[in-house]
Length: 305
Length: 305
Image (cartoon, rainbow over all chains, first blue to last red; front, side, top):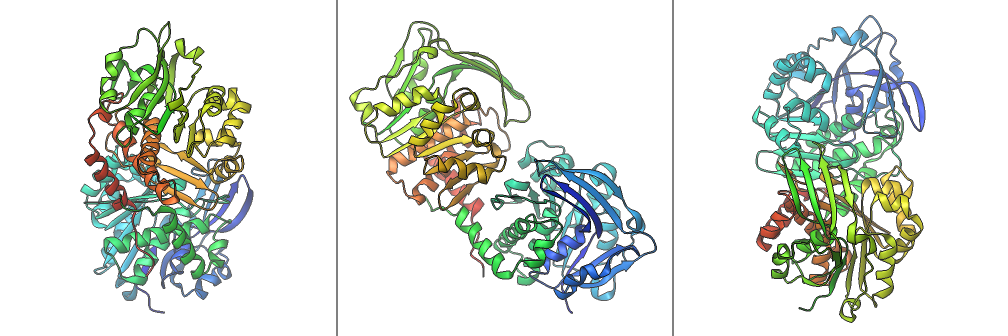
């Protein structure tokens, strides 16, 4: 199936504890959350690596959604594993265990079809791998990337090179502060923009998203949920909705990006309603449209009279 | 000067330290911040108590703004004093000293004109005093009240009675959680609504404001500032802009309240740009209108296409 959107990231087996329950060995990883979300809007190609132990039939629903898994390579060894816990402050994950396994030698080589992708998402992986992917893609219309504290501290130079070459950087509030060295978020956003990207999306968990571009700011709330069951993958499903909507509409104007940010927020709000991406497997386009309309109803106010 | 808006609260002499400087013995207190903000929109009557040491000429600018200070009673003794410090996390004030002084025996007795006020704001004071004020006002169109952790813990029964009788409760996020016993903010909002108010405004500092009413939610961001100089009075100046705008327009519809929330946010964003209410003394109506328009530009997105 043809697709103009590609994601390069991780596929993982997660074990997650929240105050509301525990889930052992469920599907996770940035590329899977991303594609589960993006495929609600657009076809999407996944480039990632799994081990021989990976329950391949578990991703059947992604294939059913038209996700192109040709780039999901199986390597000798075990799949990347992450074990984490959330307390009542669901904004912060406590990592208990990380086993990179096959992910340690991940070296994506893109096919011609993958190189021609118009929309590229570099999920949270080693910035040196992100650079290798950037070297392989032809002339995408829009490239976005995510990162995390681990790379900000560990590989700042490679990360800086990535940031210079992407159109939109997506990261969370603490990461934006750490990356820029600025405690004030507006200053942090401006500093990152100076390095190259046209826009920076800063995710603030239950407080929503703030987007900085050269001449404007866009602020979107999070959907107010009565119960957040498992926040794992909220950021990646946000990114999936964001990029999926852009790929589906081809609209990279300011207005298009704003709509994409709200759709990303809508998808993320469904994702946290259940463990892993169970909820993303059942949500319908109609549900997303309704939630998008609710975001509008929740934020609109009239011009001054 | 005739006025339909009244505030009952504190007038204080504050000493504040922030990472950006220190200000000794400056004007403060909920009623002063409120009226400095509200008077940008509407005449306002202040009911509060000061000591004999109060630098009366310091409030000249409030009189110049048409603030009715007839209810500002001088009692034998010293004015209420508060000393606080903010670290780099400007969302949280650390109280170093509190001297209630004349405020300890504050017992407001309203004049006939004050009793007939259409719009009433009960600033953050002892809920028993808030109840005494409620017993004296005739039939106001809209009553709003603020409170704080000190009263939530110390006088929960009196506070509950206040909440049952007001139209809008204004409080911050931590207070909403403490008051309701719910860590989830949506549940907290719903629980408080069940006690009586038609609306609950929850202030979230740099993350803006969320408003819960029976059938709808409104979310407004904070204005993204590059430097927050002194957050003291942000909540009271928000309330002043909110109530001042309502009093000026007489519009208590959902749309009117939303506009008032945004104007409250606009005023608060100016207030934190300098110590005490120095910035509120110089801000012009034109500045407020511009900032209101910026809030709209920052939050607007189109319906789904």
